[in-house]
Length: 92
Image 1 (cartoon, rainbow, N blue to C red):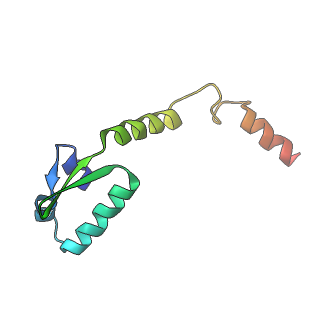
Image 2: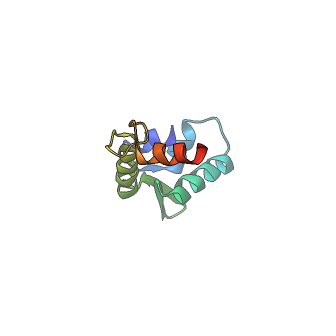
């Protein structure tokens, strides 16, 4: 839900907190995990922290998910793929 909120643009932590029934420390924990994952970046301005999506990482994540979920000639679901032949050879 936080990522969904940030898809609309940068938000102050206080604005994110208003949408959830959680403590500030719980939100901080979630934001730390999102920042460590690379999906979200934070910037401090005075006593406030503003969060936004890291567009470069979002693009790379989309590309990765597309690559592993798209049909390919060497996909393991293809009959006779290299992976299937290697597995069959191990069982023989």
